[in-house]
Length: 467
Ligand code: BG6
Image 1: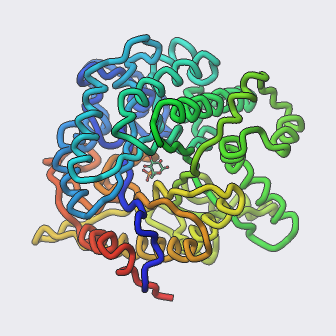
Image 2 (image 1 turned 180 degrees about the vertical axis):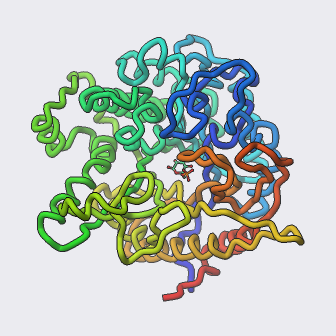
């Protein structure tokens, strides 16, 4: 297949601080909400006691081993690496005036290491974590004051890294708060819809303020949002199913609409009104929201279906979003339905809607890997998954969609977000660690490592269009 990818396409991978770094109390880091969720993003909040240890406390020890890992990414030819900054390394409690210098210095070292190999950073300000201090003292994003704390944090890191980081993202999968309120906005799982949407509103205002700050501080900097791209299809062509699908897609597109268009869409005002949802939106908030993002970023793992048929609705729900399964698709070991064509469709939907450049910042297959007696790991299932998705990205580019780059999720094995386990592996690089935390943490190249290296080297020419 001849390459449809532009010359400066940002090929790479994506990780998040709480899933790779470990060192959860090192160099003055404070405890984050993630440190209270040893069972993952849907897990109950578990109090920390001295001497306890969750899998994320060490994770894959990226905090200490990053030079080796960056060298391996460079060997694959990465142009870009998406990381997140742990807010609690910079502001351990969240409400301090002065930042923690040791935390800032860590990311300086990390960015310098990436620069040695010409790998551009793409940095998420908040990936499924916030300082636990802000939850305890202020009620998380339920409190308007958190907007100010976040803006202070964002301005601090923009100032510090403005000559090292050009591409930024505000909140990871910002729409996930509807499904995991503690993870997304630091609220109790049984919070009311009004409380959740108020917290989301504060986060949207904070996101817009960060966009403004980035534009003011980072010369030539670009900042995007980050959506969980959970595209839904109608299970049938019954008009009611189609309409309900549109309604449910708007549950998550709403976030993009506010961030890319600069205000609340009319359909949300109706939704709030008809569901008794009260959200305080001040004139100042409305003004702040007008500062819109430069590009749209999103994760894509699967699609799902919608039906108004109650009987079908109650059966066989699948994956983290409880989507109705699609009879035409196969599923991963974790019930996530595999739909490469859906990625082309989603890219077109988002580009038609926003006409802004798109960045696929997560995509990948979580699977169990087997290390053979000779030490090799033959992950053809992962190669097939990624190949088929990238072929569809090429098609979307040919459709005219502007795609800035592709960072596959978990280029090195890491702790899974939903299940907090190591055995759900995404990497091109294997990490010797099991779900109980046993293992040497040694790194090992999988078959997919060489495959991805060839894809990058050929700028997508080596992909196989099997259709
Ligand atoms: C996304 C998150 O939802 O999916 C990542 O942004 C996460 O943090 C990824 O790891 C895959 O999910 P999981 O549960 O398989 O780790």
